[in-house]
Length: 118
View 1: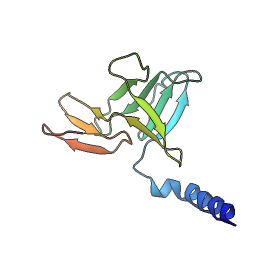
View 2: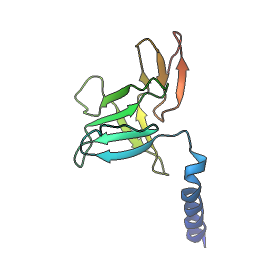
View 3: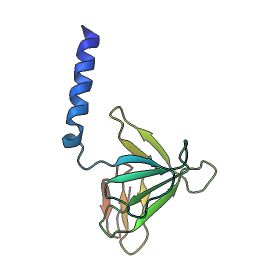
């Protein structure tokens, strides 16, 4: 009975996922970065094991942010997935361009402006 309830709960969570997590990034595995990058998508680039990640800046400026997933690179990031299969980048990303934003690994803005921090 306990397993049946867990399976039902999991099925309901998966069915509601598009409405519950509208602000979260969704991962897309690709061999190469596409010419047109979509909002709210985290592209995991590489054949089999991803070596790079890319996404549009969540501030809306339209710039593509590319991040190394290679552990020997500096800086480098890691990608993990929660129980619903949604990705999280770690550590958070800090943009030092004119926009000066930081955003959490889920793609949500953590701060905007000169005093922004993670």
